[in-house]
Image (cartoon, rainbow, N blue to C red):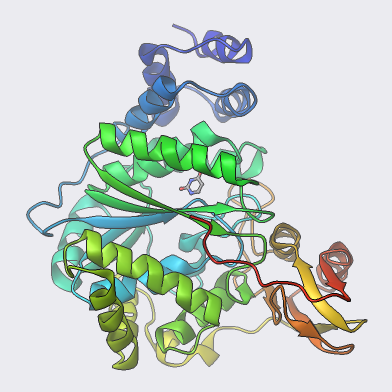
Length: 431
Ligand code: URA
C-alpha cells in the first residue's frame, strides 16, 4: 500500500477502506508518512468528504494510535465536554473546575488553537510552568488526588490527532465535518469518557456556519459515540459574536478567573452553568438540572470552584499565585481603545474577524510550531443588541508590536455594524 495512492483515491472522491485509513494514520503517527502528504490527504478529505463509515474508521484509527484510558476504577461515570471551537470560548476553564468542585471528577483532553479559534492548552500555558503533556499514569494519579485534569494529546494519548491537528491549524483544513468529528471523538474515546457533552458552535466565528451543518456534525459525533458505547448530548450554541468579552490567551484566563469568582460576563456565566449542570446530571451527581444549578451557584459563591482551578494549576506545575493575583500576568505593551462613531444598536460584532485579528496580533499561529504571544488579544465591551452611543468604547486591542496593532485595527474596520433600529440580542443556544 502507498500513501500517495490513498491521497489520489480521496482526491478522486472514492471511499477509502478501513485498511487504507489505518495504514495512513499509523504511517503518519510513526513518522513514515511526512507532513506534506498528510496535509494533502487532509485537504482531499476537506474538499471531498467522507462517508460515516470512513469517519468512524478514522476516529478509531486515531484512538488506536495511542493508549486508551480506563477511568472506571477512579470515577463513577466519567463525563467530559468538548467544544467544536470558537472565539473567546474559554468555557472549559470555567466548567471543569465547577463540576469538579461539585463532586464530579473530570479528566479532559483539550486542544490548541485552530485557525481563528483559540485553544484551551495555549490559554493555560500563559500560566508559567503549566504542563499540558501528562502521561496516562500522571492523568490517573492526578484524577485520584484532586479530581481534575486538563491535558493535551501526547505521544501516548491520541498522538495521531495531536499531529494532524497541528497541520490542520496552518493548512486551511480545519472546517471539515469528518476531520472535526474524528478529532474530537478520538480524544474523548481515548480519554475514557463514558458520557460526553458536545458544544457545537454555529455562526460567523465557528467552523459550522449554519444550523443544518451544525446538526450534521452533532449527529455524526453522536453516532460515533454511540457506536463506541458512549452517551452523547449535543448543544448547538451561538458563535456569531465572541463568547464573553476576552479573546487571546492570558486575557481569557483572567476572564475565566473572574467567572469562577462569579464576576464573569453574563453570557459566559450562563453558558458555563448550562454545560456544567448537564455534566453533573449525566455524571449522576444530581437527579435533576435544578439541583445541579443550586450547587453550581454555591461552588462559585463559596470559592470552591476557584480553589479547584488553583489546585489544577499547581498539580500540573503551574504558578498558582497567578490565580490569586491575576495582575501578575504580563501586560501587552500597547493598549488601544476603539470607540463607536455613531449612535444606534449593535447589529454585528463579527467573531471570525475578531478571531483572525487576534491571530494577527500573535495570539495564534501562522506556521506550525510558531510561538504564541500570550498577552495579546482583544477585549470586546459590547454585545449584539446593546444600545451604543457615539464615543463608547467598543473594544480594546492589546498588542506588543505597533505594526500588528495597526494591521489588526485596519482588519477590524468592518467587523462591527451599528444600526439605527432596535436589534434583538443573539440567543446563547439554538438547540
Ligand atoms: N476541537 C477539536 O478537538 N478538533 C477540531 O477539529 C475542532 C475542535
